Length: 268
Image (tube, one colour):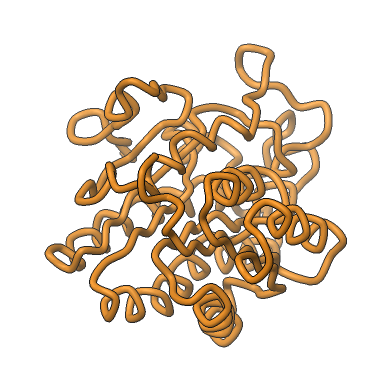
């Protein structure tokens, strides 16, 4: 994974789950890594300490910042860039799921009109506003530097339109559509924008305890490690507007995990 050791990366929602795995993998490969959590927590502190052990002093940072708040997003990007000496890569991983609506959403779906407006607002703020605000703050730095990488973490196409999964599913449909727009807006700038998703139900806090996937199993969050390292590497430069599924990853052929064109999610 040539070039990863030169990268300065900010991973939102990096205190646990997919974000933590990706951040640790990047630090282990030599990247300087900053992570955010929505608020101060023991998990955020522990993840920051783990990153520093891997990356070394001055090459890791843990910040409490709500990505859905414009001022907090701008502050997080600025602090990360100052601490790491720049910003080459933004991984928009932070998000909220359907547990905010109901702890039984997997077995007793909540119909959209039954959802409390505050829960709806918080999910949309984290999953829609958050990636936009973080990217809005990061892109000017990347333009000055002459390039960069934005990776937006998504979900399966089935989840986007699954009964009882609003607003979480539709928020990810927005993110995938937005990713294509951003890739087009940034064409020729040297900044690549891609989507990465696990490819199935994954063992994270987004699911209630005891949950299982359609096949009775859950994917390990570590499934995101290999693809995020490749996306951070020199080999991925110039790859943009693509959707990568971690479950389909092949070390000998990273592009085998790419879904676009006719195989992209069809929302309607």
